[in-house]
Length: 423
Image (cartoon, rainbow, N blue to C red):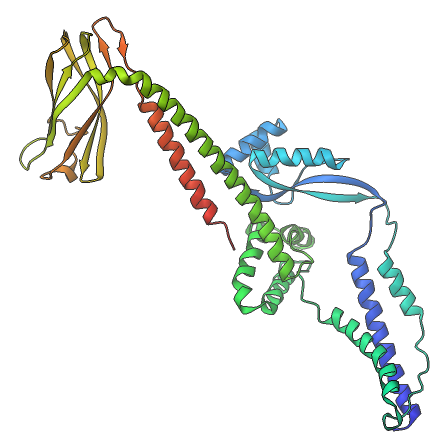
């Protein structure tokens, strides 16, 4: 091969590499234009996700925005702008209020006016395009010294490396219709590592799921580009790594809300325990009453029968006693029911009476099939009592116990939901 032929071939390759590189730089510049000098508006945009139960969140947002629930319900569609502000601090304050209300929003920055600067990258691309590749006089390889080979080879390798960076970059999500976006998603998934593909698919579904089916079925033609853009807005232009990071950030927001709710439940339980402790101190007067000989029996062919002996060791004449009875089969609670017993003439101090619970009523709360022909334990607590003057002795602690049990159940549900939040 002659030197002229070698020279012509290298020049053509360098020209081709230069054109590809400048085109790629212009493409990236257009995707990352700088609008920082333009007038800016901060839009509060609904992401489509609810942080709490949907109806509760709608009611909260309705109160926040001072409008009807139905109007709010129509407004809460993914990608809808709830409100806009001229400064960032006001937008951030309103964003916190929406999260407290139970919906997930984001701040979208909208640039108003004409484009100011095409960006340094685009300018550099145009400068590169204007350059002409010099005539390179390359001696035959057999005539080159090691130093010459390095001098000629390094620039070529640098150009090739830069071109490969743009050409072999990981695929990103892009498109202008549901079909093109779906193809782009498949390409990103196919390019992902096998061990991470399932998590990536879950992340994409998480960030595009809200409103996907609705928009896909109810849009066509020119509107499809807008609708598909709204559905894929959170992941447009992202590669697999960026999608995973965005999904984790979104999930962490949800985890943070659940952790705060669990902390609130724990605080409520602590306050209730404090109230229970105060009531238990005041209920020391109930220790003057004793329950003994308590038993339960239900044999085949008979009726459920419960019996207890109540002794009044207080200085009061008791007219009525309020109990809470529980049936246990071993450690398993079968039933818990309130009942009361009255003494018409009053139960004098130091006296006792037998209380019998016996009923042929089909609605008898003590008629538990699981208790028939079993060795059942019958436990009874005294809630409070009344004397013949109508004065209450002791405070009914059962409402507080129920409130505590409800809060503990709520905390348990929140913890289960928190554990389920992962990719």
